Image (cartoon, rainbow, N blue to C red; front, side, top):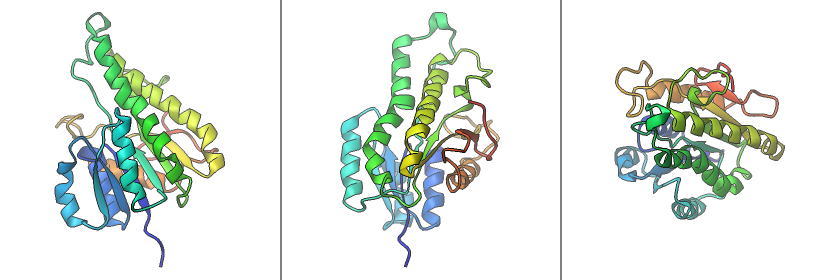
Length: 234
C-alpha cells in the first residue's frame, strides 16, 4: 500500500490556499496548514477529519511556525510539498510615491517575501525526506522585472519581485538535494484580494498550479509560470 502524500500550505484559510487544500484532500493527500484564523477551516475539517490538520500560522512570527513544525512532526517526518501561499495586498498600495506609507510597506515585505523564507527554512528538513518533493511559491505578475506594467503599488510589486529572487536562489540550491522549486502567478481570481470582477475562480487556478507541481521545478526548467502552465518572464 502506497503511503499517502503530505503537504503543508500557508494562507490556507480562504481563496486559493483553501482551494488547493480541498483539491489535494480529495486526491487522498494529508494536508497541514492554515493561517491566522484556522477556524475558517472547520467545514473542510469536518469533511476530512483524519487527513486535514488545521494550524494557527503567522508567517511573520517564527514562534508560530515552530509550533506548527512540532504539530507536523507528531504525525510525519516528511513533506512531499510545501506551498507558500500566504500574501497580502495592502490597502493604500495604489498611492503614488509621495503619499506611500513606507513604514507600512515593511509589513508587506515581511509577509510576502520574508515569510516564505521563514517557512522554507523551518520545513526544509521535512522536504528533504519527501517523495519527489516540491516547493511552490505563489507569486504575482506584479513581481516580474521585465513584464510588469503596474503603476504605483510599490510595496506589493517589490515584495513579489523579492519572492521571485528567493525562488531563483533556491533553484541553485535545492535541485541538487532532490527538491523541485518554482514560482507561479495564480491569475486574477475572484477572492478577497482579487475582487468580484476577477474572471478566474480559485479552484481553476488551484488545478493549474497543482498540475505544474507534479512535473516542474527541476534545475533545467523555467523558474516562473502562469497558473495555466505558460512560462512567465522574470
